[in-house]
Length: 366
Length: 89
Image (cartoon, rainbow over all chains, first blue to last red; front, side, top):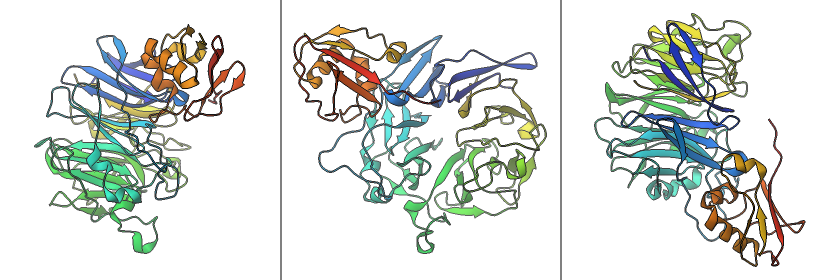
């Protein structure tokens, strides 16, 4: 069973450690600073944290051993002329607003991908010491149709690298759909065929750039199987691996943000449903986790150890992670509550800590 | 030379005590200060070089309103205070 969990919150980065049978939460790093993203790099044991200093902008930190060190920050290239606007007419300044995703690029020893708000994708070849802006995605003509979802500008919240071929990278953008490159970021295409956006006018419901994937998760057991918690429901790639079918199995709700994919069984994935759309609280005050073990034909509703009345905990898109043991989950909510789910989520235990709102969490693989 | 001071809150992340540097505009003074404290740049300026929206600069008690180009004149011996907005919870 895993023993260490990184928890990025609105007020700092916490680490939960299991000692004996008990989980303990340490004193936080970056106390008072919102932590928008965390990453554990198993290649060298380094930790990365994306910080949002608010007035002072976003920063990246890397920790090796016990010391954190500030890294280069991704910088948007500037362009003269009129400031751009999003599809919804809101200002779209070329300036980093949030580090929203960090993932390993296994093709290089220090390779990292960083997805950001307002919609830029960056790559680092050297463990975050420098960042290159991905022009290929940014220069897509369709970018004119991108918009914000939850934020005023678009954002890249998911970067999924194909374990068979690191040149194949799939990103999830709120709101611009799912995009894929097969040549390490030089060329891109929108891969949202089959997704449906009921929140759009009827004739635009299947517009590829209007899709709002909330989070993507890939299964190493079958990298053609990608799960997507979409604003409009749950989707999974068809056999071709590049188009989507909607999962319509019975559930308290199919709205939500987080998704975790089993890494040995491509038919298994977990979701955390919430009442859509403006409410965004658990349905009927009950925190539950949905698990499918048959590729979305049906869901089990997992409840043991989770609050089943008067609960208003919302799990955000980076708020759930599955451990390397393939059966231990962690889940954190905007209420500051964190649960560890054993046996694939059959039994949940709440951490004994009153944490700030949880933005993201990740297991430290040992 | 103008004397620049940085927000107290910033000291927590980067040590940047007040410093006297050359320059006759806000931009020049800042650029010279960034020579001494390079990491401070991204804390105060947006990617495009304009002042972050919740950062304010006073030159001898006068607020700087040219927030993009930062061309406001700074006299030799002026006091330039960089401040941050107050924020909620």
